[in-house]
Structures are given as structure tokens and as C-alpha cells.
Length: 106
Image 1 (cartoon, rainbow, N blue to C red):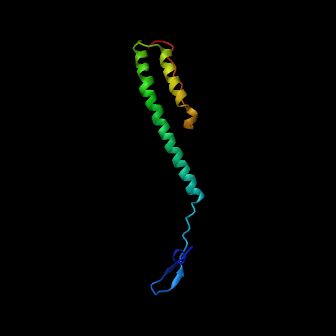
Image 2: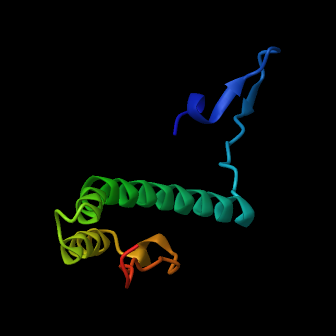
Image 3: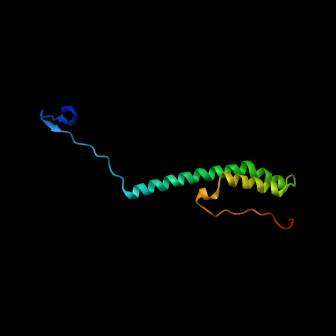
């Protein structure tokens, strides 16, 4: 490297070595918090996509089933198709309720 790259001139016309810049090291706590924030953002995106798919695909069949225009199996198949595309294991949670039909008419 040349003189100008490794040295600088002071106000008093003296040549001194340039300070080397050292990238700050991130602490383990900051790295963990960053990873958790990233994971949380991914989970929120997954949740939005999952809920949107249920609203767009399964809910209309549910309401048609309530009006006896579709079968219960059609609705469950639609919910299952959404769950196949967005498996609960991706959400990090296994706390999904299973929808079941009422056994007696209300």
C-alpha cells in the first residue's frame, strides 16, 4: 500500500499512521435478539398467509355447508388442503384446534 493509504497528515504537517477501523463485534445477546425478531417476523407472515387462505378458501365452503349447499366433507377437505400448504409445524405451534361438526342439529 502507498503512503497516502496508510498515513495521513496532521494540522501541523506531520505524517502519522491512519487508525484502522475495526468493525464492532455484536454481542451474543444482540445476535439472539436479532434471530428471535427474524423468527417472529417469519411466524407473523406465516400466520397472515394461513389465515388469508382459510378466509379465502375454507370459510365460503363453511357458510355453504351451514346453508346445506355443500357437504361437511367438502369443507373439511378445503381446511385440510390449506393445512397441507401451511403445516402447523412451520408455525412453531402445535396448538391448532380441530374443527368437528356438531353431532346433533341445533
